Image (cartoon, rainbow, N blue to C red; front, side, top):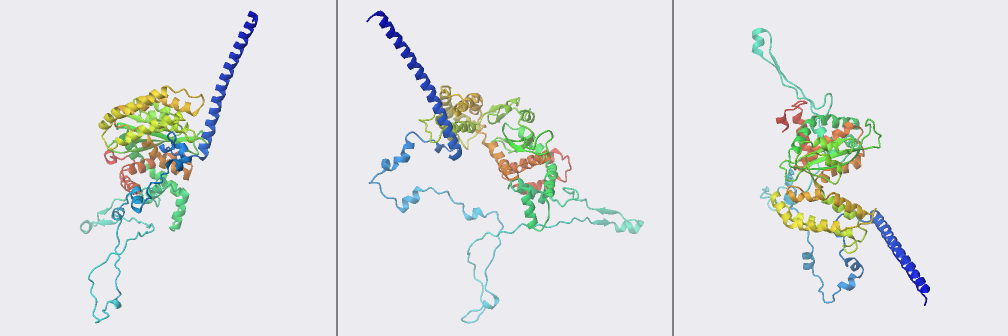
Length: 509
């Protein structure tokens, strides 16, 4: 073979090698694109048909998915004994029932004794009168008494000094101080206003339905009147809520979150634009629990910065960058949000062997499982246990995260970016035993607002939104301290009207 033929063969081999390399690279690119399209398809199916729960059972361990189809063949055992009544009962863990006495212990009791009539209290044998010798308990029932509405009429009695009148011809007159009205020229009382507020902000009953309830009671109160009771009544509560805010910022830990609220008649904004309801809560180890709601026209971080400008403790939040404007606080991240990011990146039926997102999800589950073991311990003890048991898991987690190279534009990339950007905040809980691993405390506090929003949809005016923030602050704080909201609002409105518009701080305390 001539040198020319050899050179031609070498050139052909080089061309074929380059072509193979080019086709291999193109094949890899197409495979990545196909994987991305499959991921989007599975995520779309999951969003439409799948469960929304973040329960860890969503992740199937390697091999478990196949056993869904062939578990009968794999698990059959002809020698396995059939279950008996005893084994069935023992295998089923029932939730312990509350004793009936405990369930009814706070309710008033009306005793009904069934007795013979007067004409039946004679012995059939000798005709003598029967004598009671004891009682036998039969049963208990719950009796519902419809709410009662009554009118209270206030009079003041006037007194005169008769001896002075007889001596001088002029009498000295004395009268009792008037009970200050909650709202001037109104039928509103502390209990009626507390009832409207409780039904709207605790039970989620909008004012137009409350109007119908009052009508069934025979009282024609328009929803405009009820709205006025809420807004005007909330003005009495405003000084108390301000004192609650001061108490909140004096603590060591604060949780914060915010959600959308639509407010009509907001100056310079369309009716369809979004405003925000912010919530700030005490940490779980604070002696006095506070839930503070604040309405703001937007989501700017300057609002939390203004509220918490003097706060030097730990601020637990989600990953929203606006909280970075709080000047003196230490940011602490939320692992529930981190877990949610991995969850969103998991295709349906993902396992830790088929999905990198499922591995991240399982790491988060390990952290939450450890936190459950630390429940009931003091902050110092929790800090020590976290450093001994949680820190190694975190080290392994971050080593794994740094090795990930996700496809650009994928949900996995979103989760990886969130993890890397939030690393410092997510690790902060290791240094502070009084800091929770998640921001669930704030999310649980704002959930009643979100549920109520589904009923009333929007606030008509900024004044209405501010009134809602005030009332939510009080009822959620009452619930956090195991106080019945209606009883608390009734008491506060009844007492605070005697203190005027600027109550002394000691009285508010």
